[in-house]
Picture 1: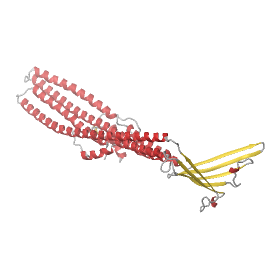
Picture 2 (picture 1 turned 60 degrees about the vertical axis):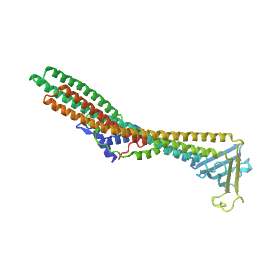
Picture 3 (picture 1 turned 180 degrees about the vertical axis):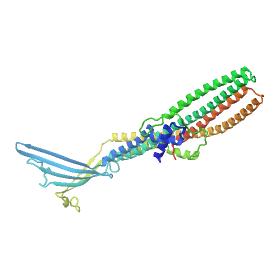
Picture 4 (picture 1 turned 120 degrees about the horizontal axis):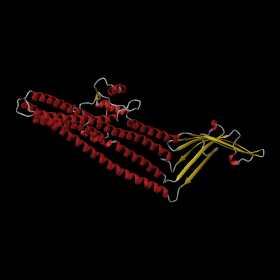
Length: 461
């Protein structure tokens, strides 16, 4: 489906053989799929995935080997060889298997092992500091939070991109409609000038009427040229949002035009639903992820207040088949206990206090951010509803001006009005039509601003 839409949109942009319509939906899908900022937003997801992959590396099994040998004066002093594997686990227990093979004339008696070597199978357990959380587990949890945060960051980037793209499209549509209005006004002025000139030749109109008709043509010629400039500028702005599948900028060519800005618009969300969506705004989510990250840091810093209490136990055997699984601390074992703690814990208490302060700061920031986002949404809702009312009011105004122009034209045809009054009525109508186009564009942009304030952005169907 996306490929089909891409092909259709490609045809709209590059076909110059006929007039082609580029709809708002197709335009926004094109922006979503090919705009560099949209692709940058997708790259942020890769940041999170790679950060999580790196954090999971903290639980990768580690293989090691240590070889030390000394030979002097034709004597083998020692030859020590140690190899093994350490497997960290989520529960904080390190499983390990170690093999030793040592020999030599001056080998430390503690390091003497059978000629076939010695195997040690065991585990190290933190039952004090690091029992519930350690740096390795904290880093993994923070990486998981960061991965989720990159999704919110992507949504935030796209949310702002879609608003800018929508604003450019509807301004382009308004300028296109305004160009048609001014073009029609110029056509009528030229027709009227030809008619007045012919009537002057036949002696029906005085010469001054031809001068007035000609000045109207010149005035509308100027306004038409200005409308062309405005349309060209808005077209160039739309071009900044159009890129092709090869990541090269694309351009709207002659013959491509937007939707009629006065066409009815389907609104998919009501204001009550938008008020509910704002609680999951990407900006708010990013703050929540910061808080979750600091909460992990707080737990880790609190864990550092505990004393280090580490137990290490290993079975000793010359063969993997002779592990004494039913006997502990009886024969063929090696164990150790490590206990340590700072006397004043000033570094640990300072780190914990600093993290708590950052957590409080971020919570206050989150409360403020929610109020700001909620108030911004209420502002955009009010603005949208007000523009809706303005559009209805001004539509009635345009209808009334059209009736006045029709009536003035009737009076002019029967000789009860003047060319000056007809021109005045016509200018008022054309100006009102242009204002109506701007209001219609403003209404559709206001809808996009509502979605943006709620954190929804563009939602293609």
